[in-house]
Amino acid sequence: MTTPAIRNDWAVMAIFTVAVLTAPLWLAPIGANYPDLLQKFAIFGIFAIGFNILFGLTGYLSFGHAVFLGVGSYTAVWSFKLLTMNVIPAVILGTVMGGVFAVLIGYVSLRRSGIYFSILTLAFAQMSYNLAYSVLTPITNGETGLQLTQQDPRILDGPAGEGLPSTTLFGLEMSGYSGFYFCAVMLILAFYISLRIFRSPFGLKLQAIKSNQTRMKYTGFNTKPYLLVAFVISGMFAGLAGSLMAVTDPLAGAERMQWTASGEVVLMTILGGTGTLIGPLLGVGIIKYFENIFSALNEATLHAFFSFMPDWLANVMVAISSQFVGEGWHLTLGVLFMLVVIFLPGGVMEGIRRMTAAVRNLSKQKPTELEPKEAEG
Amino acid sequence: MSENNIVLSIKGVNKTFGGLQALGDINLEIEEGKTHAIIGPNGAGKSTLLNVCIGRLVPDTGTVEFAGKNMIGMQPHDINHAGMVRVFQTPEIFPDLTVLQNVMVPALAKRDGIFKFNAFSSLSAENNIEEEAAQMLDDLGLGAIKTHQAGSMSRGDKRRLELCMGLIQHPRLLLLDEPTAGMARHDTNRTVELLKEIKERGMTKIIIEHDMHVVFSLADKISVLAQGRIIASGTPDEIRGNPKVQEAYLGGAEL
Image 1 (cartoon, each protein chain N blue to C red):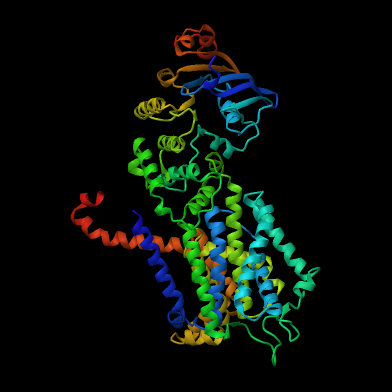
Image 2 (cartoon, each protein chain N blue to C red; image 1 turned 120 degrees about the vertical axis):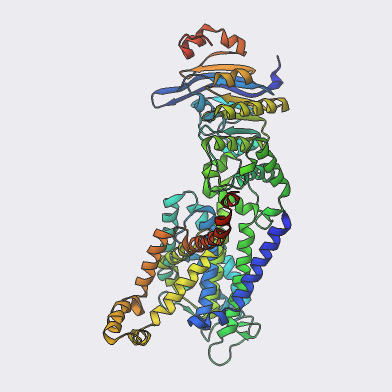
């Protein structure tokens, strides 16, 4: 019983690792293979995986998860300013601070469930966002955002040389593909942790809480600590994602904590498939792809695309489709999101599941025609 | 005489909802190893009494002592671990999980306690828990559908599943709220057989039931509840012949 399931987990990890590390190759045909975008995929992937541990397993919808993203970024930049340009302490401290904030916010918010929990997390997030702009300016540098300067002490690195230093991993500069691969390794690690949690007794208990929390209490579980631990883990994932944002670009601004950022991760998770392992990553891929690729398309590229059509038809097509690209990419995303939620409530993953089921039925059909009774069993 | 044998002792419990007295001065003692049936017409306060026992409701006055400890004000999960487990009237299961998982969760509760962070051990390595749960499902005739989603089962099957979830925790006292309601005759008989078997294993039970066939074939002692008060308590034979019971509960009909 044991071995096939565990072997199966290792197979999943192997495929996932290969897929992530070769992403620059297989994403090339759709033009998404530049390091900047790849990093975004990886960072938001971690953010969404963490969010899914809370929302997907326990059903608690946090609407303020961007706080932990922002906290992770600020912490990482402070680590670059005060300690060293090495990314390791920054990432560790960012993750820990995300966890610390998650304990505080989670402890209060988890006193309520359902919509009230969502509202509480949203309130905390907006409060943090506004504080970062106002009274916390000494820490966050307000509207300008927290940046590196020549005067930063960097006690572990010694005096700075010419110009602003860049982030490094023991001397290896974290820009371009090396930056992506650092984020990719973190993503693989995050995915592994998430996989283990999903397949653990702890994960089963979280799913049971989502299914019937009252029953859980009468079954002998104190559900509060379970929820808090799930909340803190997902907060730490967000903190890690935030610190990686600072690794790839060492500055932090309060807008990272705005409610739109919190909403984005909700959209990503639902679009891809809540409660599935891969779903949130697909959601991240789709949204970030639209944001970066569709928004870069303009009328000229559309004209080139429709050039095989007669002129008048091409003009009509361009006039229609231009509403959905460039500045209008949100429209495309909105339509896509509506279609998914209405027709595939389980997200893209449900679509994939339905398709594989349909294909399997088709391939089964032939023997059924010959021996209809056999297929019944 | 045999004070030590009392597992659950309910003393002077009162509970009112608004103006309605749901429970009035309830005194009840449950002996170890016995099956104690509580019968009574609809609205007599039977379910309210169970809710007081498991901490879902706090009585206005009175005490509920289980194994020598006062249960009033204790959290539901602590009451569960003290050894008092309830099977609900409307099936309370985990509809999104599989049938097998539904039974594994209470088995994990028994082993892990109220909280354990075992996020990095593998569920598929929990062979003992899984085998125990599968065995319990086989015993109750649900083994064939253990991979099904629990929410899609028939009502009767859900009730049996919930019974599994209670039994797998091997409670000292099992509270059964109409365990056979909504079951077909055949299933009812099977459940009765099963409950008899548990009795031989020495599990104490409180059972609320409308089906007199079930009550009289299982109970060692019966208490009759009417309008929130216990009007009679005794052996099945004593209850059968009690004119007060016949009048209040059965409208004078012969039992």
